[in-house]
Amino acid sequence: MKYVEASRFGGPDVLAVIEKETQKPEEGMLLVEVQAAGINYADVIARSGHYPTIPKAPFALGFEIAGVVKEVGKHVEGFKVGDSVAALPLAGGGYASHILIPAATAIPFPKQLDPALAAAVLLQGLTAYILLDRAQVENGDWVLVAAAAGGVGGLAVQLAKLRGAKVIALASESKFERLKRLGADHVFDYGKSGWSAKTLDVTRPQGVQVFLDSIGDLATEAFSLLGQFGRWIIYGARSEKQNVLPAEALWPMIEKNISRVGFNLGGNFDRVPGALKDLFKFAIDETIKVEITTYPLADASIAHSVFEGRNTSGKLVLVP
Image (cartoon, rainbow, N blue to C red; front, side, top):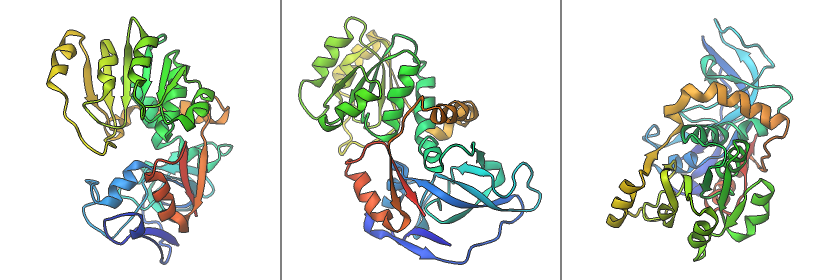
């Protein structure tokens, strides 16, 4: 088998493809032939040395896979060779031609669903779906989506529209047309001055009900756009500088009953089965659309460089 290893913590250049003998599945395990491995921001954090469950290098990278069962360990029920399964291997190892996973963590998906698409709606789709669920987005709400052209952002735009919300997408100007095709009501360039004033104009008088924030800058202009009982949900911290919440924001937060909460998928696994049922259905019938860019496993370092440069739209997937 082949897998991608980070020899040490650092930039994309620390990634290299390693070969070793493919192991047999032990009791309760499945050997899965990986057909698609998703690239996520968690991979970048792990590679850089800031992921809590990866305390030291070298280590095998990749937390999201889709593929087919090649061998079944003893005392495994409910799976057979040839089944299509996805998984979120929390210890890494997904950037590989094969991976061993506990059968209890395997997620069956319909055979008519392309493995790359299954991977694309797994981690990022679940994040977008459950974020909106936790935010209690309702028909008529204004939802503001930061980094809307990314994997989570693009799915959040579409899923929010399915709930009847009105969506404002923040992205660079080159990605405006794509986001409008995905259903965004308005698209503004967060890199240019004046975007917050435009947002305020279109959301009057109610303001923004939900702000989905993957940037994590607490001094963001988006705070002033939140209306009564606005929900600011932070699920990422991609800001180059972690600014604190300005003191003058405290009283508006109290007066408008604004809530600011953190979110991570690991604390919401109780909602995964129902979310995946909908996501797989939406992907098969093309209710949601995902732009997928594939790279061969050997080009993992190139894919990471492109991903970190924020020059992508949709989902990046490695194909062994």
